Length: 410
Ligand SMILES: [Zn+2]
Image (cartoon, rainbow, N blue to C red):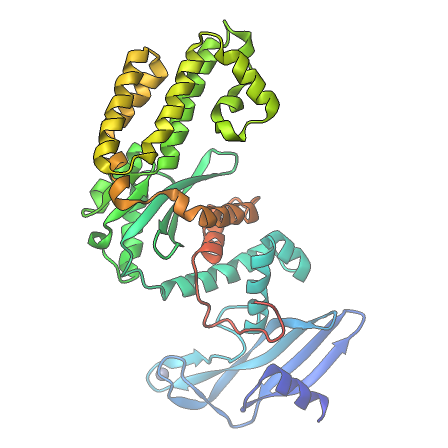
C-alpha cells in the first residue's frame, strides 16, 4: 500500500475522491493532504440529488486531526455542478459540512474537548481562535436541539442564574421529569416565558401541555407563567422560601446588632442547621440565646418554619402556615411580619407542594452542571455562549452528525 492509498483508507474517502498528493513540511510542522476527484466524475446536486458533471471548481482547505504532533490540512478542488433545475451549486463534500474550515473529524474532536475543559483552553490546545470553536459548538448544539422533541413535557422548573458578578441574568427552563435543560435565554423578566413557549412550539409542544411549574416568588416569573402557560399551576420552590426566611432572620439580627455587639459576625451561625454547627459556634449561640434578644426569637421562628415541610398532608400544612403567620405578626418583628405577608399572598403556590412535590432540589445535579457551564463560559462577553455551553452539558443532546472518533473517550 503506498502512502496516498494509506491516507485514502485512513480518511475513509470513497470514490470519486482519492488522495492526489502529500506534502509534509517539517519546518512548518504541517502536513498537507491534497484530495481530488477522478476525471469525468458526476456529483449530485446538493438540492435535488440529480447528478451532473462538474461545471468548475473552487479550491478549499480544511483543518483535520493532527498528524502526530503536526497540524494536518486537507485541500481539494470542490466541484460546482450545473443542475438543470437549480443552476450552479457547490457540491457537498463527505468530510466537512458547508461553510466550516474544519473537517467533521476535527469538529468531533472539538466537541469532545469542550466537555472536558474551557473553550479558551481548547483554543490554546489546538491553536485556533476561540470564536471559531464557539461557532462549531453552536452549530452542532443548535442542530442537535432542533431534533429534540418536547411534546411530552408537563412539569418544568424556571430558574434565574446570575453571571458576571451577579449583575446579569439568564433564565433557564428545565424539564423536571427527564432532568434536562429545555431552554435558556438572556434576562429574567416575564418575556422569558413567552420565549420559552415559542421554543416549545418549535419542538412539537404547546403551551397548554405544561401543567406544573416550579418557580421562585419573582413577580415577573409569576406574571409570565400566568400569561403564557394557561394550564400551569405554580409551586413555589421550598428552598427559595427558606432563603427568604433566612433573609428575614438576618435583617432582624442586623437591626439589633448595633445595640448588641455579640451579634456581630454571627450571620452564618444563625443560618446553619443546628446539627451542622461547630463546637465554638454552638457555644457562642448558647451564650446569645440566654439573652433576651429579638434575633433569638426570629431564630426560633425560623426553626419552627422548617417544620412546615414536615407536615404530612395539605390540610395540616395549611393550618401550620396560618399559625406560623399569626405568631410572626404577634412578634412585632417587621422583617418577619413582611415575610408572613409574602407567605399569605402566595399560600396557594406554597401549599401546592403537597400535591405536586416539586422543587428545584430535584435538579440539584443539573444546577451544578449549569454552574459548571457558567464557569466554563466565564470571560466571554456573549451570554449566548454560556447558554450554548449549558445546552451541551445539561441538555441531553444527541449528536448524530458528529463522527465518533475511534479510540477517543466519549
Ligand atoms: Zn438540483
